[in-house]
Length: 116
Image (tube, rainbow, N blue to C red):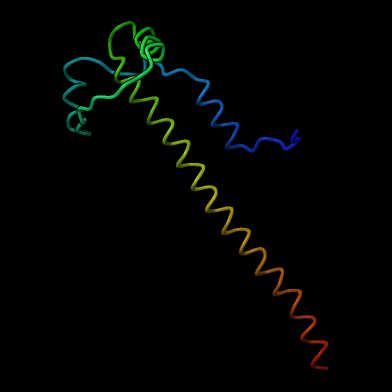
């Protein structure tokens, strides 16, 4: 069994996944609809979702706007994955820089001694 501590990204991911979408955070009404249309065009699709998942979203939305809640949940999931990838790239660059700096500092004293 691993005793490795979860990193901050894993903790953030778990917090977001554990948090249910908030129906109150979704604006409703004619003005909001007009604003949403200007912000982003939605694409109509047909997907199959497990009945229990669908019922959970409908219950959270009290029967109104459950599709917006599904969209919000998917967007948050994508953000977490994208954040993880960005941080992974930064960490890889930092590791490469550290290795290069360390090798450079180790090689320089050896080269100086050999030239004497």
